[in-house]
Image (cartoon, rainbow, N blue to C red; front, side):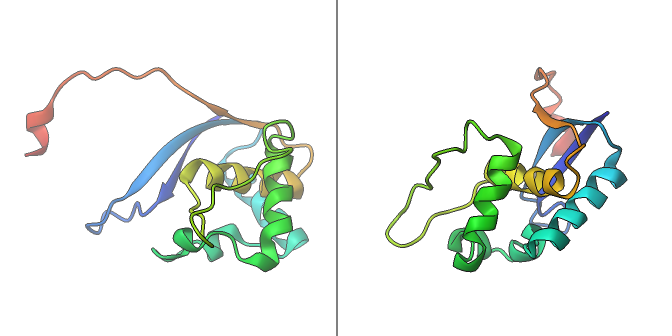
Length: 134
């Protein structure tokens, strides 16, 4: 099943800074979320809770959760994240939406090892209509 996931502030309250990503999942959205919640229970790390404020992404992953964060990334993609290191700017690094997505999906995989999920890039084309949003 194709599922569109929204990352960021999608409340439509004026900030509206979010991105969407498409994943293909062996579960429906509710099942995918249940798998994530099980991963949170197993690891004690709730990515959604940790990155709820505007400033939290600038602070990076809290030190006490670093090993769990890396475990989640590696659960999603063991090859790409085998030797991954964040790009540090002084003593900070920023979490971007793709890393967030991969860690979120990794926690879902930890919660449900039978889950099959991967990111999908759909082709897109601009068909105009700029004036509709003035």
